[in-house]
Amino acid sequence: METFYELAADPLFWKLAIPALAVAILLALIWRGSVKGSAAALTLAGERMGLGNLPPALIGFAFLTWGVFALMLLIGLYSLIWEVIWHAAIPESEKDRLWNWRFLLAQLAALATVLGAVIALPVSLNRLFLARRQTETAENQLFNNKLNRATTDLAARHQVTREIGRGQQKRILTEWQDDLLTRAAAIDRLEGLVHEREEEAPRIARTLSLYVRELTRIYAPETAPKDASAAELRAWARGIQPVRPDMESAAQSLGQLQSPQMPEAEPVKIDLRHANLQGFNLNSLRLRNAQLTGAALRLVDFTNIPQIADHLGDVFGDGTVILPGGHAPDHADWPAHWPKEELSHGDFMEKWREWQAGLEGYEAPEPSVGDG
Image 1: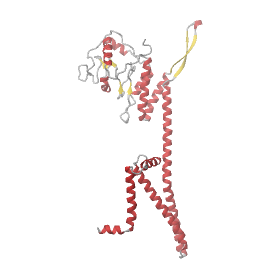
Image 2: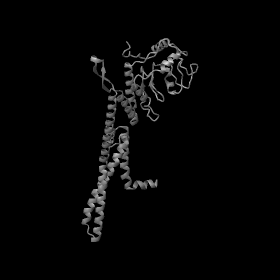
Image 3: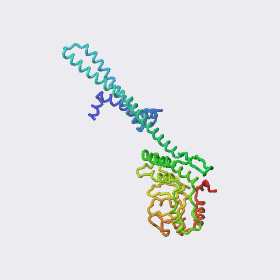
Image 4: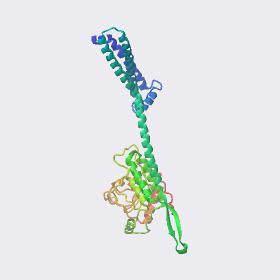
């Protein structure tokens, strides 16, 4: 207790305790939002200094500390100036006077320098914040320009000139065709942009998924021969080639958009419903979160494709499918809604459509161009 009384009797204690108490009360009011508009004002001021991620109370404490420090330096500067003026009026020896004068001037210069740096600190922080924001804006604009150019090239077309007819009937025909080379390059650039900014993967996945689905409206899947045996169906399936190389490239890029290091804040959703993937090479692709609802699988060997296991409940197949791990229809993982026998083409189509009709929220695909 004696120590406390001695401390309380010291004037310096109250000079420090009262301002500290006032600061604590002010920070508490700011924290609870009792001071009208103070928290919002501090947050706005902090954002202009690049401190927007800090809580308002901490921002207020930083500004208060800066203000107290600047005020102390300002008071010290004026006190030192007054001391320089007052010192000149005090008679003393010439040698002591010259030495003290030089020392006071050095103190004055040092204090003025520190005060200038402290006052300029908010301005410097604001300038750094604006420079960083300008840099981010320029980078975003450059990225969006590259993304827009690549997206525009997905619809690239070029003129093709060819001769038709013979003899006097020969004439030159000029027509527009899809520029497959430019489109393939655009797909490759879109995949490269994901590696540049992984958070843009969902946006690019939606674009490529739409590209594959829309081309499917024009290029419908080939229909399997009716009443064909399983061996004939396998031979037919092996002979199928991708209808267009750019569609295959887009599907392959979709499977490369996801990586283990990618943030999970917004998962990459790949929507390939009703898409024509006949003949595509989809080995080693990551199709997590892909939507394959309502798809049909026949004559497919998924032995080395464990990724498809999460989608088996959303698709339809028969006994011609081999499950991941080489499992046959008698395995426990065989989907309950899949027939275990090899169905004929007609029976498969009938049961597939029946199963699709029972899917909740399933939308039947629109007829492709040329379906008649």
